[in-house]
Amino acid sequence: MLFTLLTSLAVAVLAWVSLPATPTRLATDGGGWTPHESGPVGPADRALLTMLRQDLLWRIPVSQQAGQLARRPAVRAVATTVAADLTELSDRVRAVAVQLAVQLPSQPTGQQQAWSSQLSSTSGGRYDQALLAKLRAGCGQLTPLIAEARAQTRNELVRALADQAAALVDRHTKDLTDLINKP
Image 1 (spheres, helix red, strand yellow):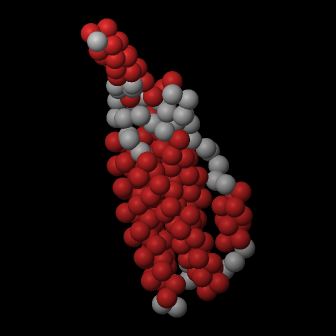
Image 2 (cartoon, helix red, strand yellow; image 1 turned 180 degrees about the vertical axis):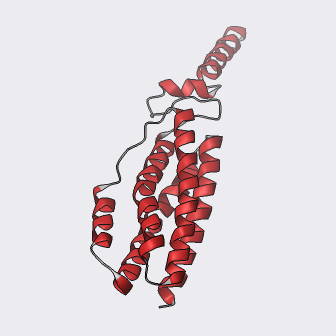
């Protein structure tokens, strides 16, 4: 009886000791996690940083351009605000990526490049409409990824960045939708 009890206790202790006790154990779990003092960095964290960076690589210059080229003053004003907000977010994305050793892309996606080209080939009221639609569509693509990363992350830096990005995307979506609905 005592031997069985001691054997069971030894097995329980070995099982408990083999469990990951700290985030540093996650680096070897095969799931793409790496340790960091702000919490482990996982695949959804890296995906968020990558998608945000790619989005910013096309939306910042397009928004800056729209601040000059848009026909309607309200569109120019919103585009200028969006460009300023996104420039600040871009700085934060790059800083977090450096802290977490996440490599970021240097080019927008092919779809985003095509959107930029389409916008460059329009003018006047059509430019305003196309700009608003493309910027709002970009926000729509980001929303689910931000929500997924916020739900999955165990990293404080990524969670704070996701919160900031979600607030900006929500505000921009509202502002863009308001402009679309007020021709």
